[in-house]
Image (cartoon, rainbow, N blue to C red):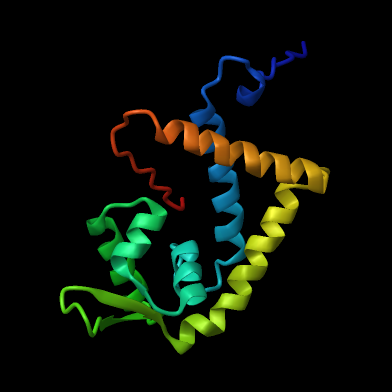
Length: 164
């Protein structure tokens, strides 16, 4: 006798699914694909933080923390990790001895093209079959949603994805 297993409905097609669940599932897929494609690198996380550091060439830890909406202690741990892997170094700010610039190393510059290409590839895969106009609309709607949610009182919350 053949038993047919009923497949559960996709979570994201259920109308009452919280947006956070949908975004979390999307983020897991996205970061899983990024990590898989960059698995030959000598480090395995914080690609976007490194991207921001290389893009700006000289940025303070506090500026990074603020722009990525993470607390100062978390940013210190991220910078420590990138530094231990030879990707960034700290330089004391000339006008504020309590602040440090985070600057990319030659090693970071060397891996950045691969990271940028991987982000472009995964973004392109995610938007497969979605017109440029729809892509623009998605980004506009997401920005509006971010703005709307920023107006609500909220606890600080951090998601950590761990490669398994």
